[in-house]
Image (cartoon, rainbow, N blue to C red; front, side, top):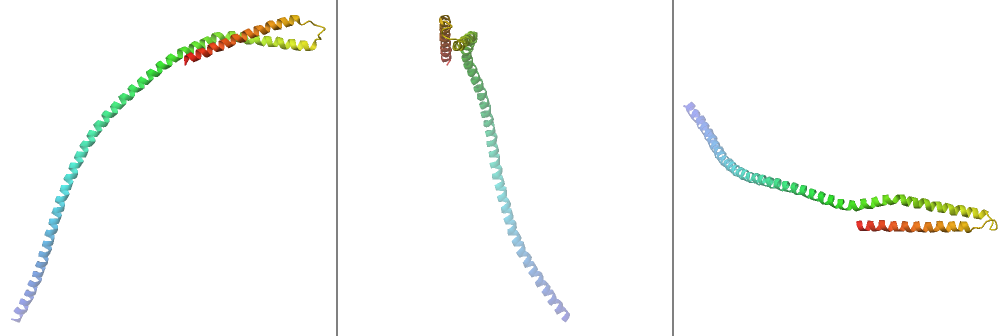
Length: 185
């Protein structure tokens, strides 16, 4: 019988151990249940947040598409305006330059036409200067008694008056050129 009692005691101890284990498992089950509820709430919150982000992303994407279309329209308009502005500026500048080139070309042609005369004038002035220099050189070597300077004085006066006349013509030509340049501007 003792064996039965010691068997009962062992059984009782086993039952108590199992009950403790069951109580522990029930406690763990409750904790797991509340943890599961927390996880479910977290998942629900994440789904809600995900939906919110998805909706916001969708709205932002729509806005981006709209802004892209608006930007493309603005860019096309800008390119058209830029092209028109370039064409307009080019045309106006071309016409303006054309109107200024004609008077400049006219003055240049007149100057080119007068250039040979100016060269002749320069050559005759140089010749007159050379003659005067020769005369001065000769006059330094000739004694007053040896030579009468009346003829050379006449030639010198003639050359001097020719020189003055040519210088006046040069001044007149310069004035004409200056007048043409002022009219050009």
